[in-house]
Length: 159
Image (tube, rainbow, N blue to C red):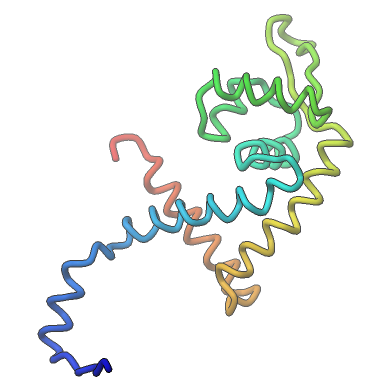
């Protein structure tokens, strides 16, 4: 038989202070768990998290070069190139020469890429709903604004 005894406020504070619960720690944990959940939800469609991110970037920005894709998806140009080859083989993207610069190849979303992205958008939205079940549309807009602001703040040179 177990009994629970109430901890004094001082003891509870001491125990809680030894747990790594700072904002940066929690954001890191969230990143880890969110990536796991996204991997699990995207896998049935044959998509990885970086591929979903890349397809989303193409939808938002149109045609991009491999270097631009790497920057916007936060992966190395070499990794982006490998990912592009895989997505092109699946018919999700197309590569065409840049009309203004012969050595640059522009990459864009195909109809098949749009279709798989649309299928996976619903899966990602469900993960987001589970992550923040009580967040209404106004709260979602506010959270998105705060997160964008944090990204901008930490992206400033010298930080």
